[in-house]
Amino acid sequence: MIGVILAAGRGARMAPYSNAVCKEMLPVGDAPIIEYTARYLAGAGVGRVYVVLRERKEEIIRYLRNGRRLGVDIAYVFQDDYSGVGTAKAVEAVEPWVGEDFIVCYGDTFFHPGVFMRDMIMYHRDKGSDVTIGLYPIEDPEGFGVVRLDGDGCFLELVEKPGREEAERLVSDGVCLVNSSPIIFTPQVFRYIGETKPSPSGEYYLTDTINMMKGDGRRVYGYHIPRGVFWRDIGTPRARLEAERHFLDTVLSHEAIRP
Image (cartoon, rainbow, N blue to C red; front, top):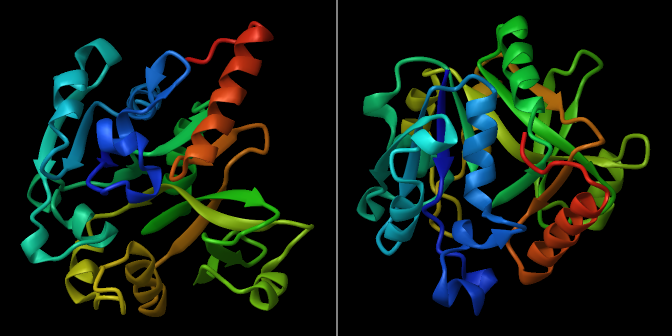
C-alpha cells in the first residue's frame, strides 16, 4: 500500500508559530509532527510515501529528505493551486503515481501510539472497502466532520461542522465519531474527485467526494481508532500544547513515544 501525507495547507490558525515554521514541522516532544506520521506509516508496512506540498514548504523536504532514516521511501508532489485548492485537490495531485489502494494522512495531525494503522489497513482489506475512514471519539465535535455508522461499521452519513442540535442527533454512547484521518482509498476515488464541486468557500473537500461515493453505492466503512490512542488536530497553538503535554506525561511514565 502507498502512503500520502497532505502538507499543503497554509496553517493560518497556527500563527504566529506558522509565520516562522510550517505547521507540519512544529515539534511535539523530540520530533516534528510530520515525522511521527511517516514513522507510523513505515511501521504499518507502507514502503512508499508521497508528501503533497505547496510553495514555501521546502523545509519539509530538507528535513525528511528521501525518508530512508525513517524506514520509508519519500517523494514529493507539489499541489497546483490553479487547478483548485482543498483536500480533494491535494489528493488528486498524486493520481499519476498511484495505481493501488493508498492511505491518506494529514501532515498536521498527531497520534500516539500509531500502531493502529496496520490494523486499519487489514480492516480495509477484509471489508473490501472503497473508502475506510479513521474515526476518533470526542465529546465536543465543533469544527469537525462527524460520521454516523450502522451496526456493521458501514458509513451512513458525514456531517461537516454540525451545530449543537445536529451534533446531539449524532451522539452515540456519549461521544461523536469524528473524521480524524487516516483515510484509505482505492484508486476509484480519483474519478469522483474529478466530479466533486467546490464548496461555497471555493475549496474542494474530500468529505464531499466521500459522500458522493457513498451515494453512488461504493463501499464506505468507518474504522474505530482505539480509545487508548491520543489524537489532536494540531490546527491551533492550544492543540499543540496539549500534544506536548501528552508527550511529556508519556516520557515521564517511561513509555516510548516511537511506534
